[in-house]
View: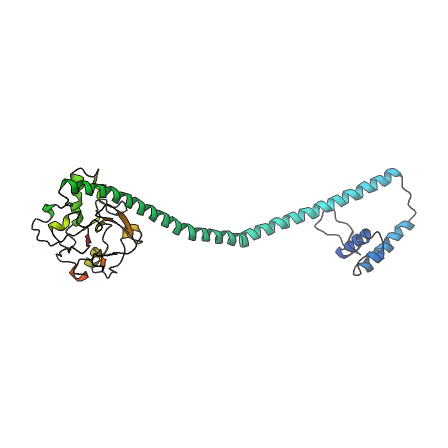
Length: 315
């Protein structure tokens, strides 16, 4: 029942084994009734009862003061044992907490962060793109007002700068050198726009870039009132430059200004629309690719002509 002292404890002395201590605790809780002690602890509890019985036989006479001192010493020893036990339990708890934080908690926090990033990044990009689309749309509405004012002052005609095509014969180069969108800068020069930024999408990578401008079939085709629902201006044409660069492209691709989600276009009546595809329906009911000339993709690289029933937006 009694084992050797623990050499690592400064107050070491004879003490009970863990099994005997459990048996004595069970005996005390049972009110020293062996029949109420659990069966697996009953033999040790019986031995403890016999040991305690020997104490009753000792002829010990103590005064009240000695008895009080003995009680105090016993209680102090009990308090000390309880303090040591609680201290050991606190150290173990902190160690386990640190281990859980380093392993399971760290993995959980990392998983939450990864999930948050996987949601936040696309959401942020989507919000940024949506704001860019709206900013471009508002700019195109303002530009539409300037275009209408220009047409009123020029017998209904849209801007055309003859100096850009001095030998104009109804053909427009698509060689990458000619900038068809520069015709729109007449609105700035004539005071119809506040500054050069009004003739281009705010998301355009080139500060001096312009919107794409419809190639007309001839002088009469430039009148704004002839086809009020026809697209006349839109976001940058992404196909021309890629084809001229020798790259294979999808001619149905969207303008890069808005994350390839679509493109804003301005119609002759001043309305602005965001197209999810690079096609519109012509007056004859056919699907018309707004990035390609009437002759198709094979015509890119040489002068092309416009068609009255066609929308070809050229930068």
